[in-house]
View 1: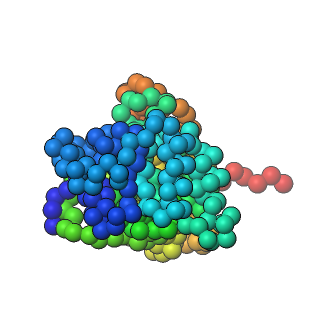
View 2 (view 1 turned 90 degrees about the horizontal axis):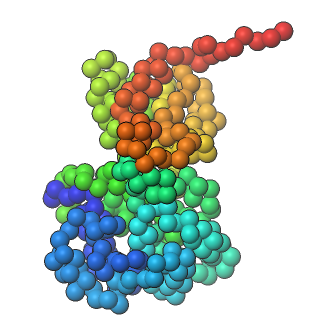
Amino acid sequence: MTVTSYLGAIGAAQREAMEADERVIIIGEDVEANVYGTMGGGKSRADKGDFLQMFGSNRIRNTPISEEIMVGAAAGAAMTGLRPIVDLSYSTFLYMAMDQFINQVAKSRYMFGGQASLPVVFRSAMFYGLSTAAHHSDRPYPMFMNVPGLKIMVPASPTDAKGLLRTAIDMDDPVLSFEACLLWGMKEDIEDGEFRIPFGVARTVRQGTDVTIVAISSAVPQAVLAAQILETEGISAEIIDPRTLVPLDSLAILNSVARTGRLVIADPANRTCGAAAEISAIVSELAFDCLRAPIIRVTTPDTHIPFSPAIEKQLYPDSIKIAEAVRKVTSARIGAGAPARRN
């Protein structure tokens, strides 16, 4: 076991994959100076130089500042035998390549009747919470959940960042990795050497009996803090981290709700048509009889992100908001406060 940061885990996964398979390449804007992760990964220039020297400029390639070119080139390379990792930096940069993502990357395997595979990973960082304002602060994974053919990972720990990325690189389908910059400095002991975490298998971060908290991305550590606060009040919260949104481990969520009878979903993305809304719908459809109280979503409101740090900080799910939602759901019941029926 080695204490490793979130970005260090991503760098390790990329290094191991490139050592194991010469078909794995890294492309993107300024990646020759950035191979340990978006915006440098906290590694020294010497470390980056060693990485570049080890694999060479044929396998670590800078591209023009054009996301459409990056995504299109990666799709073509993947269909002809390579396994690209594309560093797209800010997650909002994905929008410039929407046609490539939706009409080419997501659909090609289906359109070619399975004769073509798309083994490519697209990495991007969600820069919310750092006063990067409206153009750089989006959490766009919900809109890509609506596109058949794409797999989506949202790692919330160094272990998951490494294990999920190694799995993603091995896949023959396109994967979008959304990595929250608020987690970059997180450190934990992770296994030495190669390991993989399967897609579609949620992680039970904490066991509990009174309420299920499904937390996504940077909401996971906030949910842990909330659970610690609630424990002092006699409320036992179970925390489920989906780890991947496509495929989604619905069974783990449903089983947890069946035990606790209550559900709070903490998601840093916007409220409307988000991952929290989808999870809420699944539980409402398949486990309504298990619910003792209405489902509560703790999300970012449907608004653009302001530059002001003081204002921005108030928008995202935090331990205080999550704890308050749990208090509300543990004191409520189905039908409580419903409007009177008119005759």
